[in-house]
Image (cartoon, rainbow, N blue to C red; front, top):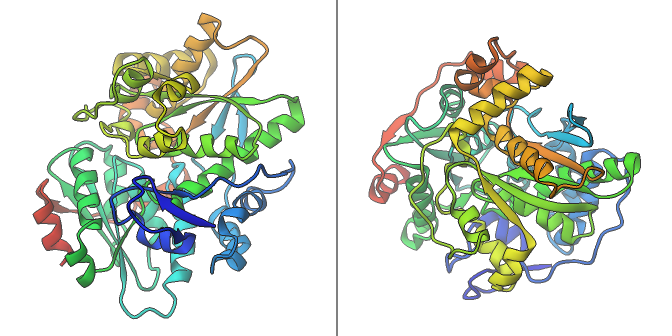
Length: 431
């Protein structure tokens, strides 16, 4: 299978080439030249097996095809359980059982396993440039740590990630370098994209990306939606609907693509924080990127979601059809805190701020009748609440136990270099 740019000004490439490049030369995002036919998948398999079956058409004819089952086994060696919530027919898909306690461990580990094979025998190291609003950088850093011929430069907005997130970003050392940027996530993302499009820089320092613009992260994220939906259908029958907290739109894009491949997913609703670019668009406004606003759900503090370009491409630029296919809702900080406290008091449930945005949206869908009583819904739980103890613990009145893998990272010393929010500053550091 070949992959093309959303901007149609770059030649088609193989999947390995798309993964290695990250971003297309014309600045667009890689997408399949055509979506493969629906896949016949079955419940009862592990996530790794489901992933290999789901992804096989995308890898057809690619140098990585023979290694796909092993790559999936390496990447998906932790669970993503679908757990019932206290409210009837509601569920939570726990995506935080990986090494850095966030859903991004799935895609980051898959990408690292793929690139380590593609770079075998290379003498020049490949530098992964990743902008993060919180969780992406930690997942990528952990996945690529000590991988030969691979280096990682993480850019994060100084003061706009939680203390434990910041610690994760700077605690590994070795081939991992953390830059704390005196700006917003949008500044970090713009700097990373500019580096990837700098041909003169690339000639001296080969670069790639590990943000959700990378197919090597996006495609494997389809797997946990497929596994959850198949498991649910086998147990309950019918389709599983999802509310997905989203910032850069990669996690939701993975669910959308999985559904297009025949995975038994029903409606997909997008939950954002106060950064309301997507809700404004789906309510009928123009798509207008804005400066991001700092919120309690910081990993979603995105004012220009990159994957919107992919989403619009998949709908052939038809804004009417796209707006008719999805709903998106914005949740402010006051509602996030109220949701975390109320769900704990009523049901003993503990959520991170990002998951709480989706829980609130689901509550609203239930109250309004838009979610039928007999329909089954799930919320994507994107991070463990222990990563946001400063927000969560005062609201529930107790400590949140820290998962062992996260605790091990927090015990390591951490260091991050200061960086101005300007491309010239990043370029100098990369050189």
